[in-house]
Image 1 (tube, rainbow, N blue to C red):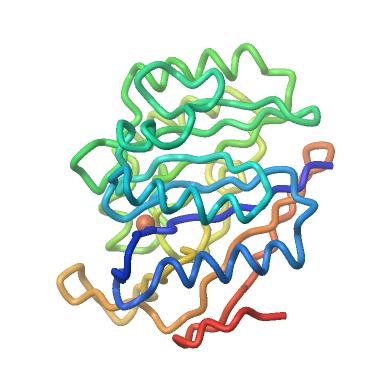
Image 2 (tube, helix red, strand yellow):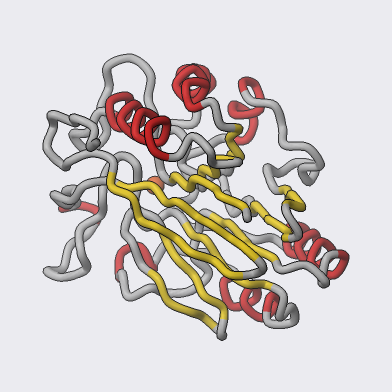
Amino acid sequence: MVKLIWMSDLHFLAGDKTVAGHDPRIRLGAAVEHIGQHHSDARYCVISGDLVNEGNAADYRALKSHLNKLNIECLLMVGNHDDRGELGKVFERPYGAMPGFWQYYKPLDGGLFVFLDTLKPGFSAGEMCGERMAWLRDVLVANDHLPSYIFMHHPPMPLGLPMQDEIGLEQGAEFLSLIADFPNVKHLFLGHVHRPVAGSVGGVPFATMRSVLYQAPAPKPDWNWGTFAPAHEAPAYGVVQIESGNVTLQYTKFCQFELGYSPLR
Ligand SMILES: [Fe+2]
């Protein structure tokens, strides 16, 4: 059995800056403390992009010192707020990462875990260029005997979240058509949307994750980026347990929405 912690969209900042009225250091600190109390036996902690808010090395450096308190090896991914070059100044590139990208895989306990890089620098939407798509196909072909789990920042399909759906993966249809050739792909884990959504696409189950920092509002009443204000909802991380191709995901609340940020026991 593999047990993973899954965090997403930390939007971390050093110093005393906040994002959408939320303090990323306090939020991440509360998550780290809660994980230490309840899930210190997890094998890895996957962080599915938007590691920092402004993509600079100083913030990655401060993030690193916070993550060190986890005592769980982190598997980092990039989102649209990240910068591959700045990230690489602070964190070691993952073993076997695709040249030029932060895209890699890890065989683990009889399964294959794939961590995609959907970053399109300068854009909120995501990209899987031909090069990254070809890499993915090669990895899936070489491991088609293993149940496979794909983590990616940008969702490859609309989720009924109008504002987020506009900035999903540009090559979503091509991506879904690619994985349709691989029945061993068992689950998609998606970041970016700052809301919890689960379902299936083309027969493949998927889940998104709340942000560790701030939550996007529900799609109704209508809102847009100009009027954006975070929802009054508590953050969460995921506890993912996988055994023999079967997946469970526990959405785990670690602090209240209110600014006291006292960790839950
Ligand atoms: Fe985000």
